[in-house]
Image (cartoon, rainbow, N blue to C red; front, top):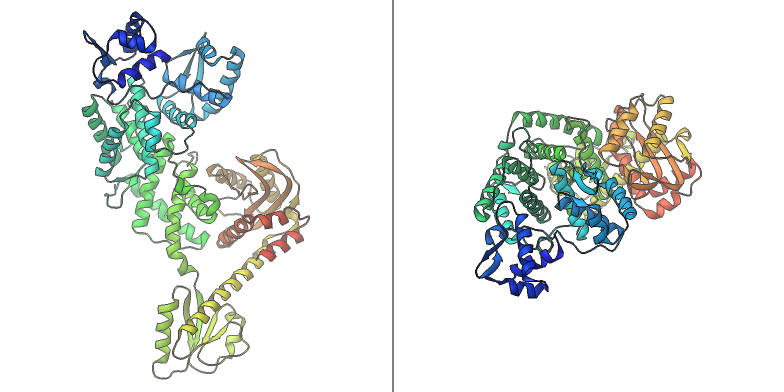
Length: 636
């Protein structure tokens, strides 16, 4: 739209009632005849009804045509930097069916050669949206599916306005000609009425996509009826919400959504919402198959990660959420919520559990699950595992107490009330015949006695009538015993899995794939893995990068089915790009099925060590395996 066209529309929008051609001409400093020509041109661009009404009293904005707006800041400020110029050109191509090269070079005051360079740069990153620039003589236009153009439009608006997260003020500023408040009210009403839940950040993303949808429809860019269809779409509450929103907007603003546009709105809603706690869950044949897969995946996770799951409402909701993930992934519409930000680095173990579960449930190995979706599953697993982790981390205890009155049962009951989360009494001795407690079998058990016991470092003497001081001593001893057990276990793993053959200094690679192929081939030659292992490692890497903290890469297979277990380590003095993050250390974790329960302990240890910048500095200076192990043991 020309600058004077925009000035004319803005001025008419701010005036109540009719205004004469002479008054408009005086405001814009042009002739009355030119005003009439501008209005004619503007109304031509509106297929359904004129934007500007005319009468003997003058001109005014047509309220039916602009209640929801017609333009959403299609004219942004002229760019000053090359990056700003790129987004300006993209938005021009998105908002108009075609733009001439001469128009762009004139408006941007650049040479045709500079424009050619810009177009090459633009082509390199719009390919992620499967959109291409087509040139016909002097004219440029975008080619690609309508859904991808809308996603690209949302991305560019955020980039242009420098807004990582949407909010109400951002929408009001960006879409000045739209009645954002009314659209917000309508959408929120039907999201709530259809049993859906949406957080504030994603709600504004949904509104932005809806306004972009309206704008593109008004400019003749209609979604095909089958473009966003998927099996059983009518059964989703999101579909009913989309119909209700479309009908309400249509009635309120004299606007029509085609079947294809309702499907698109349904997908947009699915990409930003989830089921509320009281919404009825939808059971279909596909759901039942996915539910069964999740049961198997969770059981396998119990085995690999030494954790425990229940199979009630948690599994039901996880299955339903995964169905939504699959739909979002197939249309490449992903939520971005700040609460999930950087879970991969902050909670690497939880993130890995989520990745393993999703890997087992995915129907099509070629499908790519977005990292934000893995973050979401990890986030919810965190609540669950936090509740269950105490059961798996209890210390076994032996109670030594003479049988006198009911004192033994009284002590056991008191211990259960105050220490059950951390202690489980597995044996009771009621005689002084306790010599065998010194056996190695009891080294990792807490000996609790009402009688004095000497020369047993894991023994605690308590009063027959437990006091607050007794519980304080017990809790400290339990924590100490847990740490001792953990350290012994870690040292055993390091001795078992670290060898000179799999430790290297300054071995450089061109890229991630090159490094993984090298590591897996070396393992294969030493009969640790088979020839297909490399494909499993690459598959895991495709799901989500295994880089951490801008220093470490932890490549591994989700299957944990190596022939033998090992840790393969490379420490470099210069960084390499591992997917989208620079790293200096590669630690490939190779675990067999019989050692699979060790995986989470090793994974947790390595990520904790490399999250400490002081320890990392020491590790980067090591020259051999012994020095590396010494640093690990100091940390332990």
